[in-house]
Amino acid sequence: MSLVRRKSRPIKRDDPARLRDDRLFVVACDDTYAPKQYFSFFPLPRIYVHVVETKDGENAAEDVLDRLLDEKRKIEPMEEDEFWLLLDCDHYTQGAHQKNFMSALTRARQQGVNVALSKPSFELWLLLHHQEETGLQTLTDASEVESALRAQLGQYNKTKLKKEHFPLELVPNACQRAGRLDQNAPGEIPGGNTSRVYLLWRAITAKALPSQLPVELQSLINHQ
Image (cartoon, rainbow, N blue to C red; front, top):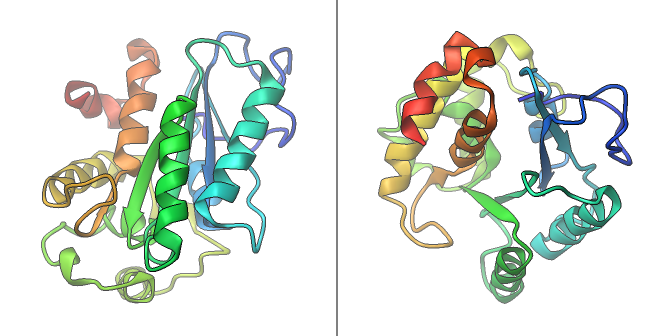
């Protein structure tokens, strides 16, 4: 995914850093650090992924959706453009927060925004690059997932992800494991641990030109 760091704002159709017919994915997250770094590790031909800047203290689902919709209005989207919310389920799906979270998901659907939830957190997606899904269902919260990731990698600092920890060839494994995990986590808000970031990867590979898709990702074409 030309999951890239290019000009943050605004995205311009005539930006010389991208071709006019690049497939555009605009992603907004409630995690301030890890997703933006992660997505920058994978430049793909003719795919342009822009991660909307995340603001500390404004991480509720409705805040994230508002930022994404603001970005959408700025760029005059074309038909093939895709807009995605990447949200964690560890805090904002509980108690008094749940009503607002569900309201944001409903509004996202109405606005044509795709949603990829991770339960409990985005770090589960990172962990799936390295571990089979078996046993991950018992991790109870984001803190436990981070501890497991730290044990797996020897270190983990979400503000300083290391590209070598997430090589491109591990992405199909993560997608396959996440897909199997997701089968046991039904519901709009997952009933068990999962990470639906694999759906974003599938969307990206579906819109990539097959002749230009790296060999490491070819296996994802058959799982659209």
